[in-house]
Length: 96
Image (tube, rainbow, N blue to C red; front, side):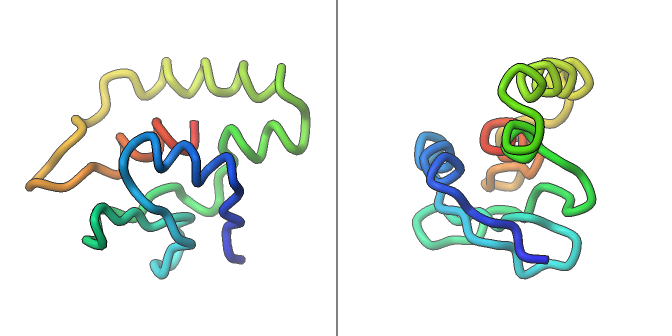
């Protein structure tokens, strides 16, 4: 199943400085590109994210899921690795 890239997701990606497209990697939602250069694939297809929760159960529920996600992932990875944006950073900023 191909992940739908909504305007909200495109806007969040733009604020981070990347362009996103449905991932070409099996099991991933999105691929990120900065200035045309591949950065990372992120978002596991088997899991919901803020945008899916918001659509299915409303904004209040999605906000609570976001809060819990940020608690679980507060110490994960940095912004850059080997000169590229990390998948954990992109997931946190775009999907959550």
